[in-house]
Length: 398
Image (tube, rainbow, N blue to C red; front, side):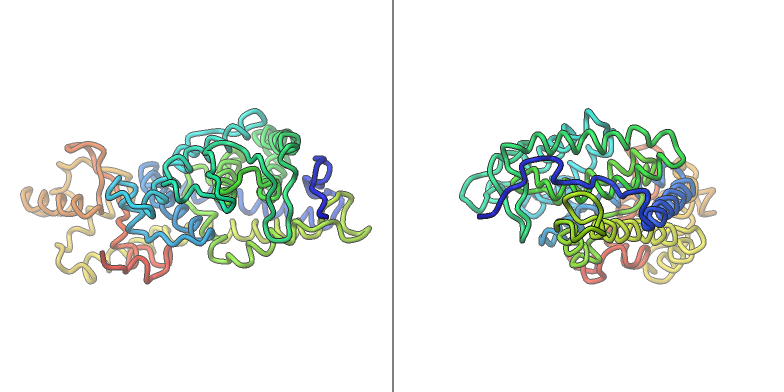
């Protein structure tokens, strides 16, 4: 008979022992991640960052769904963002995006971390059709409710349902404590970043919901990183990094589920060595995604790709379109009446060029006559922002 976990001490260690040689290396990675993320945030005009964060919301949806075995095409996600054509797959996209965008407006601490997880789960699940809420035992999942039955994922048997509140309270106390110290800066901030990746595994290990734990855990991971001052503008996607190495991600999560392997494997019930390996992998993945996006949006490289796109790929557009697009990207926004000055075209011609860019999503505005900012339409991503998505998916013809 399999014995279920029933005491919170059984999910120790909850952090990496500072006396371990690996601790220093992981803290160094936390510092590198913090610096790289801050530099990238500072390099973007605020309204350009807003447009990019909307693009990243779609990426989070695409890649988090991919990890869970659901293939949502980027154009379907774009339609979901604009509430077009409800289908099951678009409901899945809409649900994830809505939950993720809500999460970006929230802060998490000791008192709010569990309500945050519950509300994220509710917002995601309540939009799904009934067949996507069906569980293997024939019952239906209740959005925003912790599980009330036992579960096993692979070799891992999650903590007993009737003891779940004790495990979750210990989780909130431990990791809420680290988040509370993050704003002190220095080593406190770096330990909070490291603790966030440890918490990602421990949340999945607890498996608090009947289903949806993976998606909720990744949204929670992003929120905890923001609380640590990392990726505050949501300009890169942790889910993309995990999805690019999905088998390794799942394997390392599973390995960190394992019991302590001998006297040299920490002092807790679970393997500290495996937890260190997972944190090293996750930290390197985060650094890689930060640097990937920073290089993608470096002004000289972005300018070169945009110029090639508007003057060669989209030869049907006036070449002066490039000037309007670059102006929006570098400055964040501009008044519509400035189109003539920016392009050097007659006012009427410039207005027509501007309107076509708005129609195709290259420029966006919150009001019919308001200022315009840069947009990143899915149909142009293959050329403007290569490798954000697999080429075949962004080249898909609607």
